[in-house]
Length: 107
Image (cartoon, rainbow, N blue to C red; front, top):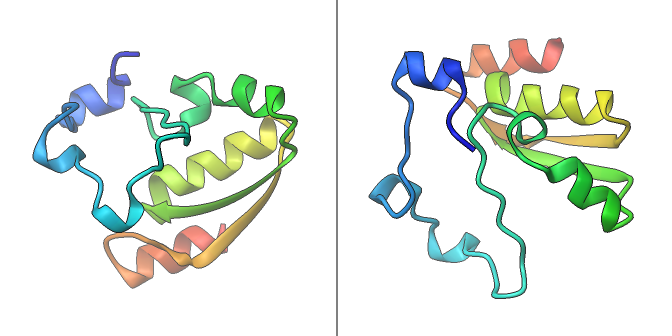
């Protein structure tokens, strides 16, 4: 899928195969793990992740990552709205400042 309008306007782009798209060795997926590239803040908007998770009979998600006040927030809300039970691992999330992180978690 193409990038979202917000990503286009802001100039946010990490092309496949670029340095910024590389995964550090410790987090590199195993050969049998599924990788789903996304083109928006929430994978529930720009991918078929809900369909995939339902086919895997997944009902509960554990969410962590960055950015707390953007991608993580959007993902948690969309997952809940789509019918999944969500646990957010707050100490495994990060954003640009501690204040933005706290503010996102307070919402």
